[in-house]
Length: 161
Image (cartoon, rainbow, N blue to C red; front, side, top):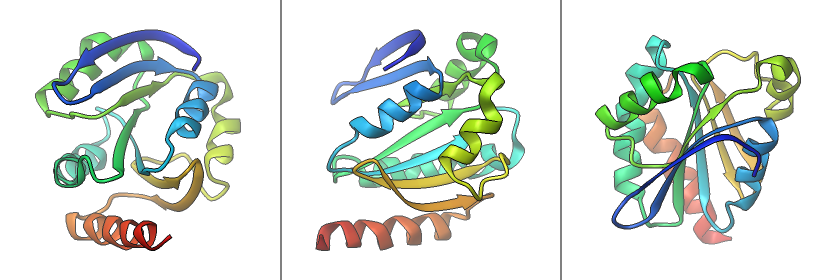
């Protein structure tokens, strides 16, 4: 993985990764997630709809944790704010899962469409991956009900495969 900065904290059950990465680091992370349904949430501390939906993702992470399901939070905050703003925010909100800050502003017009051709770059944005393959994309805020329906639908599909 290509890391621009690294900070790891240890959870009693599993290692939680908190890193600043470029787009290649993000892609490598996605590719490494095997045999899990991976839900990726693009957000930022300054984004009101992102912060509003965040408790739903945190609750879903607690509910589905250790069931072949994982949430990755990808912050689009400034890299300079990672240690002073993003990590304290994540700790305060009890975001007990991996957190990457995508620091690749120079290439954002390239990686936004590479992540999903329908993505305008607006956040929040939610993506589901299965074995590195994108199976769902949603741009915009999700309600708790929508998020749970989404997870349940694709989690059940994963179990059937």
